[in-house]
Amino acid sequence: MNKAELVAAIASEAKLTKVDATKALDAFVNATSKSLKKGDRVALVGFGSFSVTKRAARTGRNPQTGKAIKIAAKKVAKFKAGAELSKTVNK
Picture 1: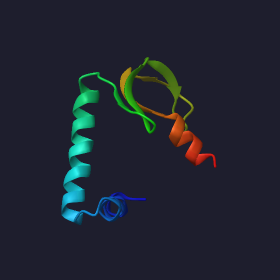
Picture 2: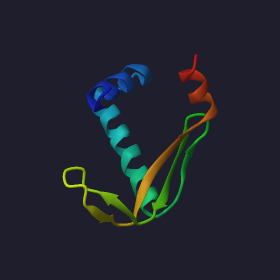
Picture 3: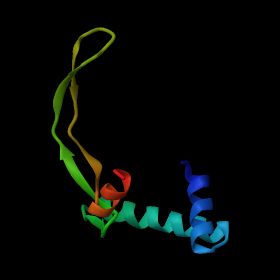
């Protein structure tokens, strides 16, 4: 499902126009992004939680040459599915 399909599904489910559904989705994405940038966790009970974790620097390999390269440390966004979502997916 891409963004346009998601907007259409939200509009249909919530009985909104596609313009309003797009605004709502964009607001959710922006609010979640800002919260994660600050290092906060975003939890949606039953659905899951978004958080930020630190990935340590490590040594990797260039697949073309086999030469060792250094991969810098960075922060990564992480999503953990909630119990209800996991249950729904596994039905």
